Image (cartoon, rainbow, N blue to C red; front, side):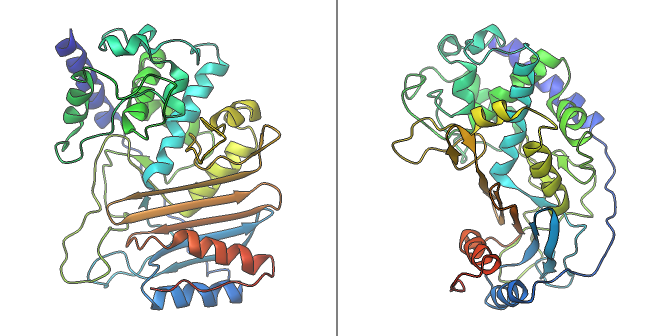
Length: 356
């Protein structure tokens, strides 16, 4: 039975590869819109080797800073521009979570139903895991073994060969990508189309995210190539094709943030479900990143992601209208400190420039 399931999944992936051929659209190459103090901060971060990437900052829907700093190749010969696509790492997990809630709103998926109802060919543990567990990472499924996984087939093989869970569903949070994988399989099962096609049709197209792509990508010419900050060779890590990776621009990321919080894709009620943590006692990752609820309402959208030499961050304060989007292709893990400094600058508060 597991063999039949694996063959079916691989067939869906092949179809997705053939049908995901959206063309990359050039953006208007306008001059950077600069808040001088933010620009001074970012130029210093660039000179210190702490940031090489694209940045977009808005306040109440108006751009106050937009810039590209650094290079898109490891030899530092090609300058970055606003057309460049970045791998956004774990922020991409928001799309599968929102898609699940979209199906919930259409009464096609029940959060309290066990996943075996939708995916009957999985092992026995699927009869204990509920859909909600996949959203808050409490399924009990183990993390990927990144040392053995090299292809999509490896991921599915590992999944169907899991004999026991690491914890009982609902008892413990384990930040495992297997939860995200199962979300995608449910979406494909219910919709009857490949996951990539569903996301394109139901999220990217309605929000006009024309420069956002799920892997596999047909053309690499607009990708900001991920590389070490030391340009010693032209060896790149940009073309990672792990199942469900997303490459996008800062402009499209802003469209996603605005669309999500203006109920263009799902309701505020569904959005708040996705931001409700597993436990309020200690920090708990939600489907939308950091838990930021006040009286049951999401008041801030903060999420970061990283993969190889890529790192990304989004920070939207719903109370004051400030949006900060940071993408880098030479990850130095300083984005949160840069974000804190930008927030301080905008609100005329003291701040410190990140050190090496």
